[in-house]
Length: 85
Image (cartoon, rainbow, N blue to C red):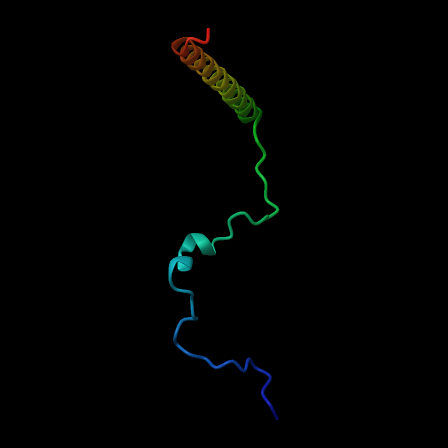
């Protein structure tokens, strides 16, 4: 009669793991895989997130306006130096 137990050979050595840069724990993590879990935000957290989003949006608009103004000023200076104005 044959034994129906697991027929894989048993060794005391650990299972082979990859070596090198890909062996880093961060590459073996399950980060980014959906788990079905979610976090329920409190109303205070939702309000704080909304304030942060508004602040980031306004900062982006101000930065774009600043880059535009500086560009216009520098182009104007270049035209003035060349005698085009």
